[in-house]
Length: 329
Ligand code: F6P
Image 1 (cartoon, rainbow, N blue to C red):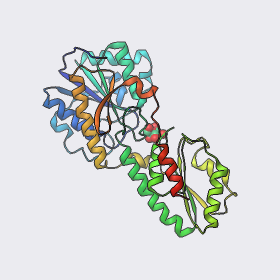
Image 2 (tube, helix red, strand yellow):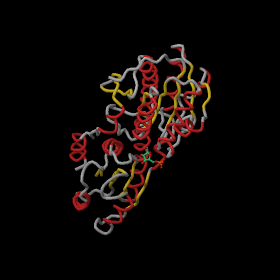
Image 3 (cartoon, protein in one colour):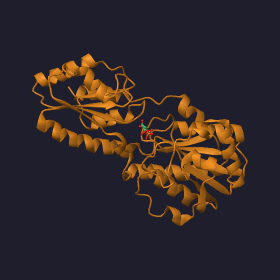
Image 4 (cartoon, rainbow, N blue to C red):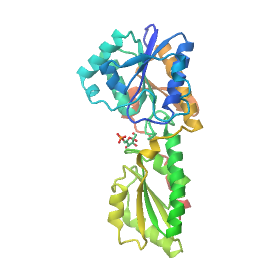
């Protein structure tokens, strides 16, 4: 059990790694819950880089007005190489002491959690992580902030692509984000009725994929959608399309959805998740917790050791993957 007896007066918060819709809702909740509990809250700009460079400002209640509906992160974010080194973390710890910040909340993905964990191990700064990434690839939480919005944005795009695919009798390879995880691909593939979903978690058999599409054509199908997770073992959507070119007798196009999935107004679910976890992080620090992530499991807030969030692997729902195969026949 990692519990500390540190009196909390001022807490700091930063957003780190890829931005995710719902981060602002989370910041709003954290600031307002913190103030409700009698704390001062400092916002740190551009993730760990801001900690190293000493870029922080007080966040009163009004500083988070009118941001719940906005995508991105008002604190800005960055992927900071210097923080990977001990020297960088020592600078950050000095800065936290100088600003009398008693505890730190890091909103980000597993890379950001590793940094937070090291900061705690080396300098005993109380840290709490909040899962914020569209990839949903963090062990210990059913959902990460931003995932639901990214899925809905991708799904809407796939619906649009289907219109043009069917008008032109075309096959579309649609690549979605997720780094090396297929959570987004699986969910939008099922929701969008994709004929094939290529996931990094399963071995891709391009011959089987081509046979399946050919069987569809033989049955009278005139268009198809293949959802490709960006981390698929057979390559990215362009590479896969190149490999199967000429094998499938259908005109094809490739569409990489890319960063479009990271922007836009957060869905209701992401706003609720951000609000719940923002407030939960304050509670965790006040309870003396550290080196943990606040997550959501079966609709309940849970505390998970930060180390588990990257050492253990969150599993993809293989039942859903099997169902997708049945439904797309
Ligand atoms: O982790 C979020 C994510 O959007 C991944 O899905 C993607 O692989 C990566 O970030 C892209 O990173 P960047 O914005 O640095 O290009």
